[in-house]
Image (cartoon, rainbow, N blue to C red; front, side, top):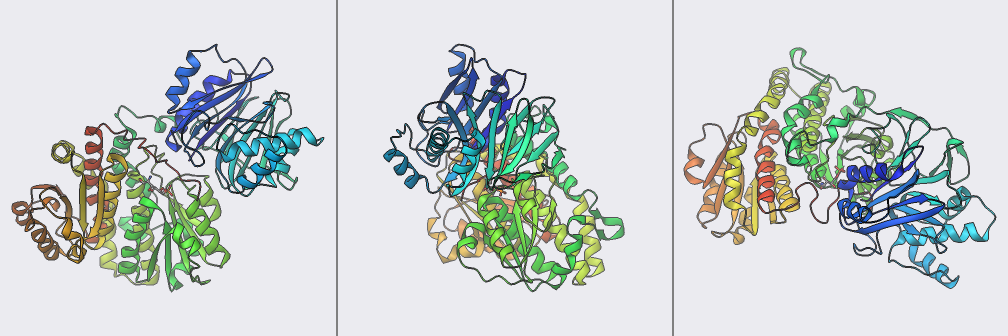
Length: 614
Ligand code: AGP
């Protein structure tokens, strides 16, 4: 969704804003804009397209001078990506400007009411309605800027992270949050506001993550004051950021996605650090220690997520049922939220999210929590909303994931799910000591095995070259590799815009096989572990219809090598650990195909890294 940034302090605001927007651009890149208070006037620059477009626009004009300002990069919800709908938006009298991430659901009736009161709107956005409402209250009621914002927010329905700046208030910014993320960085006599910590880390490690319905009054002289929309004062909880600045750089790679694919031996290792004790056949998961009994006694586990996190959840289903012998249901959070699902108090709900800000998953968590279920989170962003909404959980420690297409977060999520399933199984006694020992030793070897697959990058690139111009693709897998087939298809779809579908290989005969002809590449995950003979038959069914087979096989595989058009060999491992290895070639294939098609791999069209609106 959108990225918002603000600054007030002794420094020139514009350079801080533009740098911050570049850090946040993975959140949305349809248009961008800034507003700076310069010589008692608010100067606004905004335009369609990337932050670079905005930079060019500003560079062609007078230098932007001022030590207070706000900036925005947009993922369009209301109104197409164009200059008018770009943020910041101004009040009727132009004395105030706002930037917003979220959706004002009741903007239409508010807009009509304001038009009756003489307001004129320049854009189609919900956001412009909010600043006109704040301006209207400020003009017609004898209230402070903070009060005008507070009163207006009590009239709106929906999600918001906003920053408001006013001409007549050169020493103050007002920031507020509900649903969408907002963090304030506290520096020496200066303050930074942003959708996440990535624009702040290079200036200060001291941050405050706002909670829902909180409003921050950020004043150059009086400092930082936290209130809520009920006008009660709150005590800010200042946290120290652990993130490192270099983690936000490409580190010499052409794209963040490629860097993050290559980081997986380390990110998987970091997700196991201090948790996997292969020599003592132990798994330590301090984050869920107080809830292990809930798991052991659970009659059912519900796993919630969206996109790639949902695919990780599907692998989790196979793991918990196979190893811990607990029935699992994996739910698209958005469907679960409105399906009036049956939720019991003794249900354990695992909510998976890389960003920790996905609105659908957050809303599903709130629903399950309201029914008394125990909510366990698996998340990658410390301080984000989902960890704060759950009872307990485990961070994935994959490090910041900037590329919109999730890669290292997927393998880190599957690693944590594997540790959780093994831990619960051990506590429950549903796994033999021999199997536990074997799996822990094998899990410990996964990072090296992933590296062996990465070392085949050139071969994978060669295969990508052959299939870069296809229009459709099918991904097939069985058992633990069915979710990997879905994940492989999603990666190709979201970064190369090729239509692709993942299927349980046996499901082909029930319809999709009709799609097969010499133009249809089928990426088949066919390791020796699991239903090998069955997948060989599925490959023969595709070959019989002249389909192209690109098979992911176990090192030393012979039979499939004779049948397939191309094979990519991966190290052998336990069936239940195979998704951690078999997904890697599919990530690299989609990456190279997208690069060869000239696609923007890190910022694919129409997508955003964290989806903060329902
Ligand atoms: C995956 O590559 C996509 N970026 C998207 O499907 C993502 O997995 C989904 O939006 C869920 O995000 P989350 O893990 O941050 O909740």
